Length: 130
Image 1 (cartoon, rainbow, N blue to C red):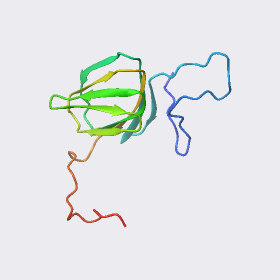
Image 2: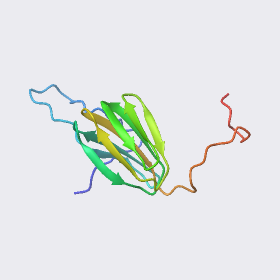
Image 3: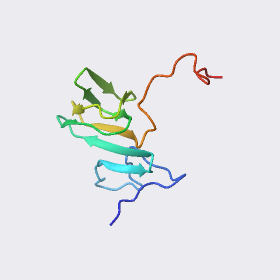
Image 4: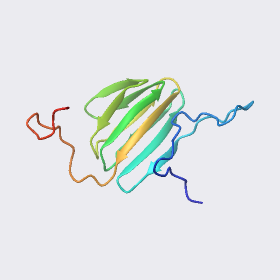
């Protein structure tokens, strides 16, 4: 059976709230929420003490901490994400995750990027907000 991904304008519950109150709510699980040829959103649910080994993916990615706290480590540096914080990694950059406490992280992957990420120069067209 194919995994169901969200369709355009279908609301995605990032926190896995129960549709109806029940005596024993199901715990949130890691799941791919949305996938297109260019983009994928994955909810990662990490138990306290969980360490995701070093790995890499081809496209640019962001990690946004929705709950808890998680370390993001690359060969060059490490940062700790708290609830509401986000970090970006370039494609092919090895990284690992370590959850200090139970954590929920939203992983956004950009598939088939046209080129490597680079910061936009101040002189680039459209660089200012209007």
